[in-house]
Length: 320
Image (tube, rainbow, N blue to C red):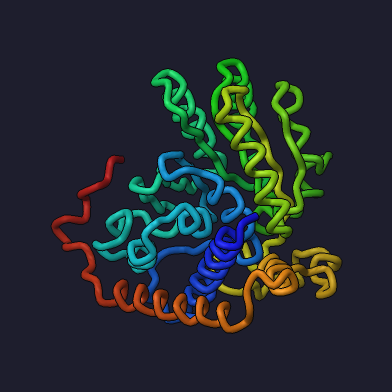
């Protein structure tokens, strides 16, 4: 992989991590009037998938969408303003953290409904095929979405029509506080699409390079006209289902999930790799991080100083 691409990966990983840590740092002030679902620990999937997409390709996301939005190129200021429910937010302050959107870069929206974005991606892929566009749709969802019937209906239709759609499951093993083993009899999620003759893979989603490589293969496959592809990325969710921190971790997480020796950091592993390969040096990485800190501080300042929606305009941009 070219040096510039590796540095782009590092930049995007750190950008997502730093944004979410800043959200967590300030969330207790209760100025962000929206629930937040942090993707700390899962950054590699967002980056690995989205950096293989074109700007015109579209993604459809779920409630844990900060990483997807940023990796696809979503406007940072508009995202933070949305968390503060400001008029300058990406959904005009009406959607909050679970309903991010930036159509200018191909992020066609997040849905708080479990599995809600899956049929949207299939519909977009159908449109691409009918319009003979060389585009791919990607839908991100968690392991709980595998328990919803709409996923299997989408598998069937996507295969039937050979649609250019990639299904991406971020399996962090927890649906709110319920461990995967308490919900599903078989943890081999990647096999679920095989019954529809859709190729699939199980990938170590904490390994940045493997994630990038497997995402590229799946996206190239879909774009070539061969039909849908399913990727299950196994990841670690470091925080609670929602909010900052995880004060109840010891009450619902398995003991092995709390073992510090088993907790991995995809950014640390990737950083060690590029330093060992002499792709860059610590000074350049420090510069990248300093630039990111300034960008993020400016985004939060912008959000905090932006106006709230006017009372008389609260029903604008709402469609239900």
